[in-house]
Length: 150
Image (cartoon, rainbow, N blue to C red; front, side, top):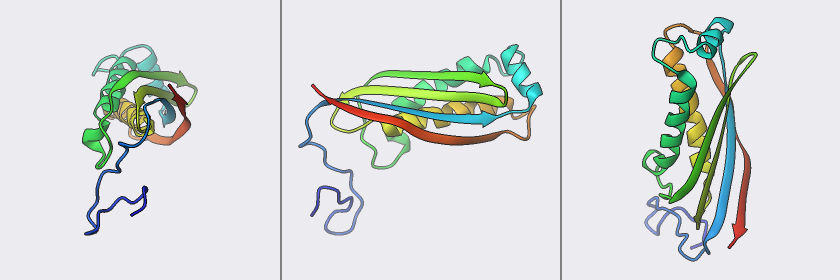
């Protein structure tokens, strides 16, 4: 059975065995965007959304999501994350989100970075859905993934 096989001999899905891999410093950065109406963006920037401080709540949600990725994504390895940095920045059309996740481990942290961005943007959506029916979440992608020998 090849190292990349994701099923056991009975065809059952299994978590990939990474026990033979060395510990490495792993880092991944993902980004995404939510398009908002100008009036919604103004409410966010002026901290007037009824549910509270949208950007801060979304940042915390993204951090929590990165830490819970293995509970959300089947067969994803639980990781000892060293750092999660989630940044939400308004632009002319909405809010950009960037998440960088770092750990020392045997497998990468790209799923954690992508999950952080996704949940942060979903949180913006949830907090603004009462005032904006035209929001669009998109452009979620992995920007960088690195591993460095220790």
